[in-house]
Length: 289
Length: 332
Image 1 (cartoon, helix red, strand yellow):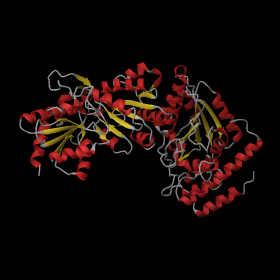
Image 2: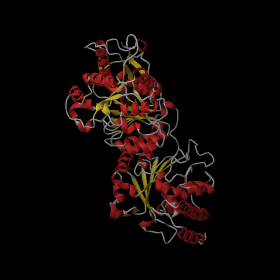
Image 3: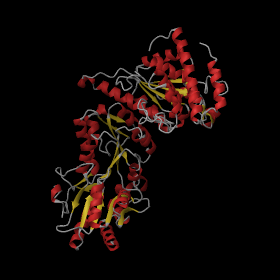
Image 4: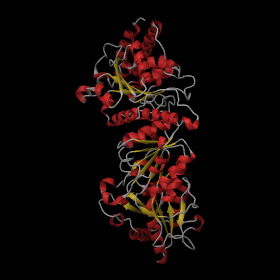
C-alpha cells in the first residue's frame, strides 16, 4: 500500500483486463453464474490483490495477513480469477468453476477452497463476520496491557453489494460497528445500482445511501470504482480515520469492460453464451495499455 | 435403583430436593471456561442476565459483546470472531437463537466450520406464562439436521456446567439447549460427563430391564420418578440420559434396545424431528423395536405454569408411565 505511479496504474489496468478475460472464459465454460457483478468489481479486486492487501499467495494462512471478507458470494468468479492471477492456484483451475469436484464452488466454500476467508452466498451476513473479526483484533489490542501482545497491525475489509443492503442483517452489523468505532474495519459497497429483478431504486430504494451510513456513525466516502488512483487515495484515507469505521461507496458499472453487458441488470445472473463470450473476449483483447 | 457407579444425587427422590435453573450451570461453566482460556468470549442479544451470561460479562467486560436485540448479527459476528481464533459463546432465548437466525448459523458457522457455541436458553414448554411465542419446541430439530454441529441438552445445572466446559474445548460448532425453570439436581460434581458417552441413570436392582426409557434435558427427572414408581409396580426399566443428542452414543442406545426390545423417548420438544426422532433413525437402521414418544404432539404451547403445561401436553410422570405400559404391550 503506497503511492501509485503512472506505470503501476497501467500495470493494474492491464491486469484487470486479463482478469476480465478470465472471468468471461470461466463463465462460458461453466455455462452458469453471474456476469455483471464480477466484471464491475474487477478493478477493485485487482487493486486489492496487487497493491492494497497485506497477503502472501505462497503462504495463504499467514496469520498477520489482512482479511478480505466477500459477502456477496455470487460474484466469486472475480475473486477466483484474481486469486489465480495473484498466484494462489494455477490459472488452468479456473476452468473448473462450478463443476463436480472443483475447489471453485458456485459460491465460495472454505471446505473446498481454504484460501477464501469465509463461505458465502446467502446475502447480508458478510459485514457481520467482518465486524466480528475487527472486534476480535480490537479485543486483543485492549488486552495487550496484560497479555503483552499487540493489536494486530492489519485491516479487515468487507466487500458488499448494494443489493444486499436490503437485508436487515447488514444494518444490524452497520449499527454494531458504529457503536464500537471499528477503525480497523473498512467496508466497500459495490454500488452498481442493479440486483436480480431490476434497478435497486425500483426494487427497494437505498437512497439517500450516503446519509444512511453517516447517520450510523460511519465515515463515508464515495468514489468511482474504476479509477485506481482515486480508489487508492480513499483507501489510504479510510485507513487513517481512527474514530470510526469507514465505508467506501464505490460506484461501478455492472458488466464493465464489455459494452454489450454494461449497465443492464439482465446480465446480473446469467453467463455469456459461447458466441457472446467470443465477442466479449475480442473486445477486451483489443484494449491497449 | 439409581446407578451407584455414577455418584448421582442421593436426595434426588426427596420432596425437598435442591432445585436450580439449568441456565445457572451454564453461567458458572462459562465463567470457569473464561478463566481457563482467554480465547473464550461472550456475545448476547440483550438477555445477558436471563441467560446467565452476566457472570462472565461482569468478570471479563473486555471479552463480552452486547449486540442488542439482533440475533442474526449475534451469530454472524460470533462467526467472525471465531475466524480470528476466539471461542465465542452466544446466548439468547432458544426461540430467537437458533429460532430466528437458522440460515446464518448454517452458512457462517456450520458450513463455514467456525467453532461458535449457540446457547439457547428458555427452551421448551416450561417457559410457562410467556406463552407459545416464547416456547421453543423445534430447536433440537433445527440444529440436529445440520452437518458439523453438536447438540447438547443437559438434565440439570451441574451437567450444564460440565457441558459448557466441554464445549469450550471441542473446536467445533455446538448448540447448547437450556431450560429456564428451576430443575431438580440429579447429578453431582463427581458424575461423569462425556459428550460421546450416554449413561444409564436408573437400572433394575437385579435382572434385565423390560423397557428402556431415553430422556434428555429437564424431563429426565420425571423419567426417573416414573421409573421408580414402575419398579414398585413390578416393571423393570432402565433410564438413559441422552444429554448429547448429536453426536449420539449409538452403542448405548442400541444396547438398551437389544436388552429391552421396547423404548420410550422423553423430551420437552415436538415429537417430530426431536431427540426421539434421532433415536428412531438409529434404531430403525440397527435394531428396530416398538417405540413410544413423549413430547409435544404437533401443537403450539400456551400460557400456564410449567407443571400445568408439562401435564397438559402429556409429558408428566404419569404420561411417561402410560407410555411404558403401552410399549410393553406392543413388545413382540
